[in-house]
Length: 179
Ligand SMILES: [Zn+2]
Image (cartoon, rainbow, N blue to C red; front, top):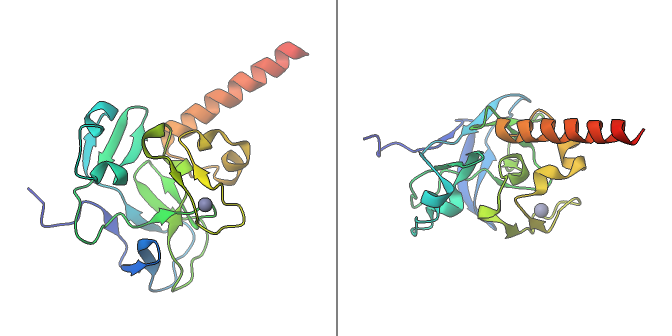
């Protein structure tokens, strides 16, 4: 058992601290675009198994495939504190890594958009992130929004990137039919 170490990883260039959202991860030094800032770890479970968890850990799960979720054990100070923003500075690489999408200055809060990882309704929520582009309600269908597909190109979880490719292909076929 490795339960004495955190299930998730956070770069030494960031730290977790309490904030208006509960907890957040903040850069403590400059982070360059492309750098890995955090990684999700934990137990891999199906949606059915996720719904049997009654300790609150399901709310922190991250979806990594159509029916697979990574769940980290809950700790007093949550270690999966790279929170959601509708105008994030980080994206997803390889399904479990959080990488900087742009240069991040010391003091900035690290965020990614749940639209990059979530493809079902297991964790929909009202959003008050304050971004000019805030969607106000974050759903399991947000990955289908064309403006997000464009903005987060290359930063979606691979299973969602595959779905987006399939959508684009179907759309192109429909357009070809209409000609
Ligand atoms: Zn928002």
